[in-house]
Image 1 (spheres, one colour):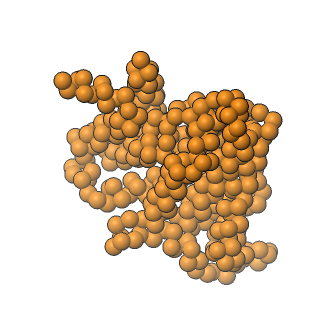
Image 2 (cartoon, helix red, strand yellow):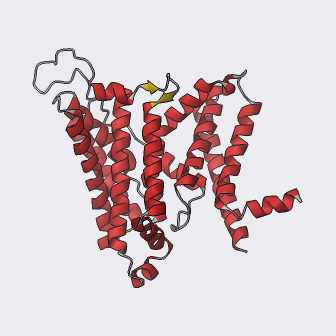
Image 3 (cartoon, helix red, strand yellow):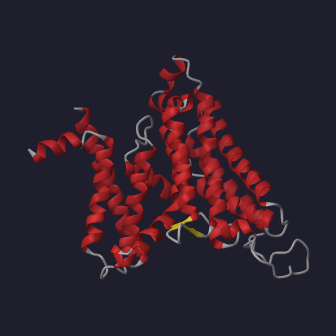
Length: 334
């Protein structure tokens, strides 16, 4: 009876995504590092650590559902961190104007990638790979290859010591009695906005239709080109938000930051069960994937696994999870 119920449950995407998370949590209960896993500080730290990657995963979810991929988000994050640091530290531009400028820049870069994918039907892998290299080079050009800090000067003379702007402190603070990091709340807000976009807006339905079958969607009157541009623009927008949060956490803008983050974001989306082929999945599944990745990394860290071992084990588990999703989807189809 139990086996039959489990088989029925595995036909649902949410249940298939929840199982890996439950398995990882069970491992944490067993290998709890002398009770460290049960402390709230461990879970709070885990949520803070996955928040920047999770914000990237919000945009990546939309792009993958539309049938694309965005390899540029890590570089756009790095560029956004550098530009935000430049605007708020040496230039001393106000926080609202800096936020608007950086978010607009991220959305514009994403829309540019989406335009090439939609208008010229170039492979998303090629377009976003080119944007990844371009954005990383631009970040190094803007920063001169150095970190932008409170000591960075616009002229030849070194800058006088000054305090961090309030926006940096606000984004790196802990709220609700020190129990939740501000960046975690930003991640939650981005996740909620993505869920509302996909679930309740016509544009969200267009994303699913475009990813499911672009040709059929076009014949049905769906503006697939505009949909792809919007999807990539949202990915760039979320990458910019993640870059702002990264700069606040690190208290500077580093042109090298965000390297490899696109792989973490893709892993969260895929681990949740969103199909790389597009058209199937959602933000709720990505949240489960983010929590699974976060707890896996935290458990390995608590048990003093070396970085190399953590990377190798994470790769093996990710591959196993993808194979599990593929097998479960095949069984559900039959």
